[in-house]
Amino acid sequence: MSLCASCRLRPANHHITNTFPDGHQEHLDLCEDCARKHLPKNVQFQAPSFVGQICQFCAKPATIASSGLGMTMFWCTDCGLEIGEIVQSRYSDLSGVAAPKDSDAWTKKMWHEAAIVMGERIAKRKGPKLG
Image 1 (cartoon, rainbow, N blue to C red):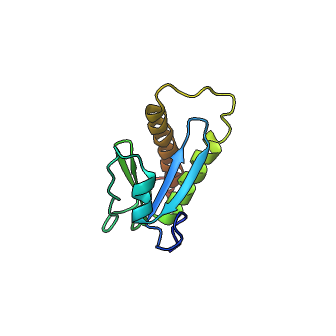
Image 2 (cartoon, helix red, strand yellow; image 1 turned 90 degrees about the horizontal axis):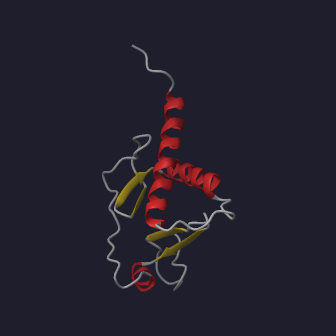
Image 3 (tube, rainbow, N blue to C red; image 1 turned 60 degrees about the vertical axis):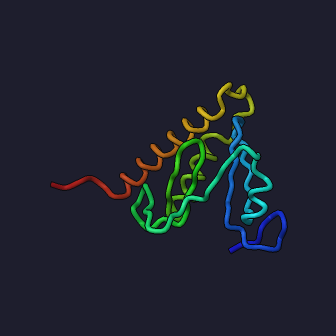
């Protein structure tokens, strides 16, 4: 486990990714104390427990839990990395796109679209259903 990017004293147990309307991403790996300091005061957070959860794509045990915007998603490490690559490839070059008026709705749509692409990739790997 990595150390907190802010204090460099405690293990980072909160992995926060901010995705901006222009596609730029900012990653922070923070300890509990520093995560509370960096989040706005009106944001209440509780890291979702992924104990006993399965990856929503491949059904392996979940190792990543992501929550925000009223959504909680569970992924294994491989699927988490792949969906991150999907998001980055589809939304990395938005320099000419104006910032959406409702960035929360835009972000939900972005993750929804990435989840569809990821689901399609998993289905192709499994091949056609027999029977």
